[in-house]
Length: 99
Picture 1 (cartoon, rainbow, N blue to C red):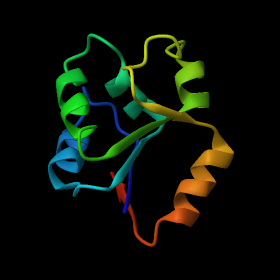
Picture 2 (picture 1 turned 60 degrees about the vertical axis):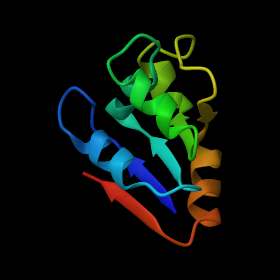
Picture 3 (picture 1 turned 135 degrees about the horizontal axis):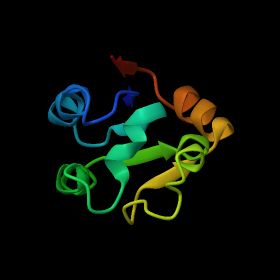
């Protein structure tokens, strides 16, 4: 299952809800302001690392780049471009967008 989150972890509890509901083997794609969650040293870092033990965590590279964050991403987070985003959607039978 693919989970897509677009809200900042500082703005809403959307990311926490997603991380708590994602089952092992799921992929979590962070886009737009949600990419702040994969920055080293943030309050979300521990939760993201814990989730990475059982799930794949990805961040949309153009959103990281637009925020100047491409060099501060937590190790192990997969950075994907728009083509990679499309591939993730095509590879997963179920897609859940967290608003």
